[in-house]
Image (tube, rainbow over all chains, first blue to last red; front, side, top):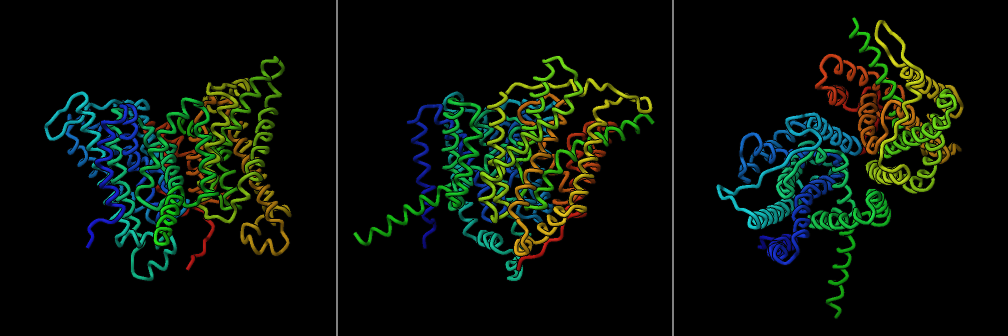
Length: 320
Length: 298
């Protein structure tokens, strides 16, 4: 019995690689890798919902809940321990997603897309108009502590990076398990034909509800990691244009594997640095054009190219 | 008493704006089953082109009266041309895909339009207050109210009546209802479905541009207004039932009054009164008040 499958082994191997990168790469690039891991988790959340045919245009809601929990915990309750913050963020997310799930699980297709968008815009409106939380400017976060240990300077950065890497990869492994498990199979069947799923005795509503909550939790974890890495949160995190970028990442990267959205985020973040520098007013235009090209010519995303490449390699091997 | 009058006036004012900004969205959805996210982009295009044209015109020092012609003209020109470009150049190749994929396609168009607007007009704000200012205000039961608002309410009513007449009383409108009901059968009957799609899309985008253009004198036109309006417009049409023009009108009135009530009675909830109403309506009628019936796929 193999305990880990191929994807999971690759994710495990990725940890030492990431830690080596931490010491090899220049600091600014390390920051991008770290930030993209946080965002990558949100893209992963969008990806697993896309597997059920559900496009979430409001995943920023939980990204923002995660970020603001981290900020508010230290601002109002003086909690800076990252594990306590994670606990609060996950509980808050489970409550919100659990309640909203009852409304959203009834909807599919465009209704799901637009209602998730509307719900996340409520939080955006709330935060933008709240003066205690810095309204549209947001506020800064202090440095994290780890079970009473408060690292300073470079150690702090390195610790957070390693924790981010561990959590991101762990989430990816768990999500991979989740997708291979019963609910993972059911949600793919829901995309194909929901009524038949019901005839077979599974509840589509309950599966979508669970899927929605799982996606919410990893988005919130991503939000905490992202906010900690940047040290700043703004209501923009909940704006639908932010959520739209996560959707973009998944369209571009594809839904074939849990790796795809993580790598897609990193590529996008690095590209953005250059694109914004070269021509700041055409970044969205580039995104839009690339998105259209992907939808038309590569409907399964970049990952399908990679998969095809691997297949061709392995089919050649026995012949040689 | 004064609050009541103010609520009624503001309610209709908001409602007219909401209806003008969202009716194009519901029209396109009703006919083509495309939820056009780029609608926000057309709204912004209309607002920018009107504000820019009014600005150019007022510099010449001629009478302000002509701006009331310039505003709709700017919207119609930019809405029609860009709408044609998007439909002929892109969307027609995508027909037949899943509805949710079309959302992503129009989202991509929205992103492109946003930056196109920035490239043409830059990122600074445009102000074209003259048309709204020139008409002055009128006293309604002791409350001064800008006459321009009445102009918008009038336009909204005219657009609503025009669409009703066009859809129900003309040959083309009746054929369009056939297309809405069954695309394949109407094509088999010899109706040029492609033409109807193009015309509907262009009318829808022009209405979006018109909504933006008419609002331009009341606001300062800045980047990002398109992203805001799409959320509002969606809430309005989902309350009325997506694809129903009458529903959009009722949705606009409901949302408009909800917002006016919260502004005057309890301002803190103004920003989400719209979502509150939407949640309440959807809790009772999951697909809006006048949603078209859908068959189940087995």
